[in-house]
Image (cartoon, protein in one colour):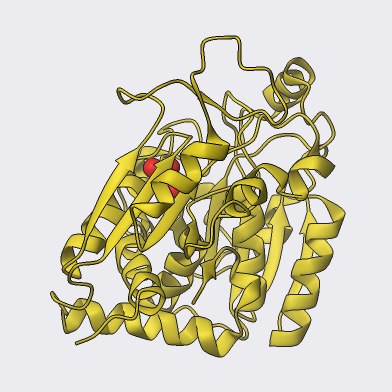
Length: 335
Ligand code: CP
């Protein structure tokens, strides 16, 4: 595997093989599989789970990793192309990325965007401008519109909890959050559930529609796997018979890049905080998923997070296992 950039680049059989390998590495550890291998981790945006789970994954497979991020004692990094570097930043990513990559056998990169223009962000120009500088195998640790490691872990989590693929009903719900957040997780999650063959409903208020091209991509994936994709702003209708509610906040696509207009719109939806009444007509054992971090009492009520519906902790642990499977395949893991 040369790149792990988008779940859409893999067949369902390949995704299932990664999920099965992740489970096998949990029950049958391979502490020498990646002996002597090094993973370079470049975080241009903050993280807890991705940062910790990749390092843990490499240790569990017998390899090592190192982390570079702007808040470390490194030279200030410039990311803008074609800039005259007469300001504070002393080093450009055009040198930094290939140098960091040259120290590893693979590199993971996390780089959000400024979220000024949705069409621009959908092209993933910043991310591909970095990966285009290297021949080293790379992993997308979250870009403007993609978070494939999260999606692989989420697929595994639903398998672990016996959530049906075909016939399974998946609700991806927008939730209130005081800030405009990236689209990477909702877009990846939508595609993952559709690709898994589920009947997916995107529940969101008006103004928070996901981009049409990405809805169409998910619809095609669903059609190929026997699932479906639709969207609504009607909570009761969306939750009917749901097996999973996956909550996430994201930026208004109507006001993308306009923080004030986004804030004005989202403040109308302060009550979009997942709580027990949301589950009134869902499956009795409908589960709650979230990629984390999550704001308690804002995105979801404590009693849901702390109650039996929540599977967010095993979901987060699956990040490590899913990434172990990716690294094992990418770096030629040997027993
Ligand atoms: N879900 C996720 O990617 O978490 P972090 O931002 O903490 O890495």
